[in-house]
Length: 258
Image 1 (cartoon, helix red, strand yellow):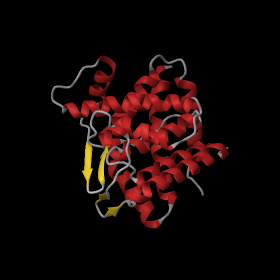
Image 2: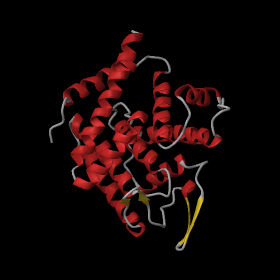
Image 3: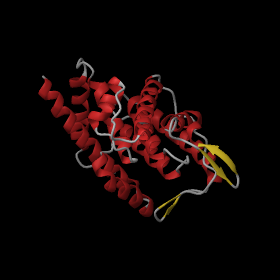
Image 4: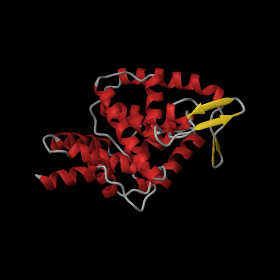
């Protein structure tokens, strides 16, 4: 598949890695920004300065819901855990995905009661009910366990065979899309899918990408168009454009610090 400007993106990624080394606390604040974008997509109203104050100093914003602070804190804690697992070159597993799901919903998840029993979204338990989003119906809950196993198997195969920059980053986009499309949990699926993308990126020692909060509508449209047309290139193209946008912004900031 042809990806426009892939060489430019790879060069930007290499620049980012080189320039960010030795810059005190740079990666910490980059992670704060990633958390702010991902949680904002899911409804958090905390600004980047409010996220920084919360994660750096434990200060809450008086005009914002406490639940949004919990969402941000849980996401950051889980991101750090994901990075550690990826740095240790741990392969993807069902338990790892459950841990991520539990992490992002630790303080905001609830017990969901269904006709088939109860499950707890704060513990990374698979959903036991149907899920709808607009006109989209996600896979039947009975299929979820096997779909997750297959996702792990396929992702691990790609982790072990990817050689080029494009192949590696496409593994990250693959697991992101598939996780979001299975909708494993009763909540936190979007955040978990983006953290799985970050897990793969860190596994390959690549910069951690984001989906910009201001591009939320385009993001959802890309996910839906990919499903409707069964064409993964649609989502990959969108995510490559997000990655390029992110890297260009960060490299510009880093060059200004030189």
